[in-house]
Amino acid sequence: MTSGIIRRSVIAIGIGLVATALSACASSGASGGPGTPATESDLVGSWVTGETYTTAPNEPYLTFSDDGSWKGSDGCNGGAGSWSVGGDGAITATAAGFSTLIGCEGAPLPKYLTSSRAAYLDGESLVLADEAGETLVTLVPAPEGSIE
Image (cartoon, rainbow, N blue to C red):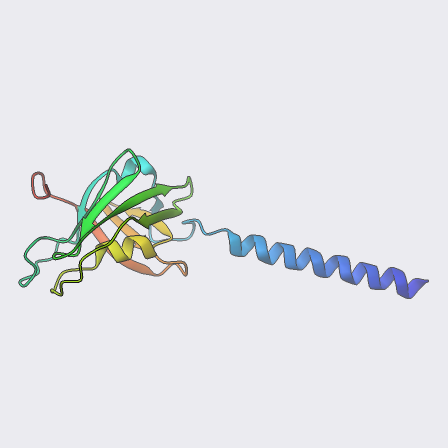
């Protein structure tokens, strides 16, 4: 009888540990990142790398609209889709439709966006991070009138 109670206790503890581990894995927010977790209103607008790309015909950019849509470019190829940010900076972005595959020196910002899982503000910069919390790209606000 005692071994049955011990067995059930061990199973209950094991289930509790598994549940705790799973809930920790499910939390993909921006805590512990390189800045303050971003909000949706923080992201609305256009963002660029601040770098110059000599062979890219256009400046790589991401533009977030307050209707939950985004558009962007790597400097040669365009992309668009939808996005949202949770209260903890957890970002979800999806791509809609196809993109061309023209090669150039630009930065793959649409790919970074759809691969990101967290968004932070570090001063005036926007940092997009992957699932492991590693920085994918750091962006700055686009100068007024530089992105159509």
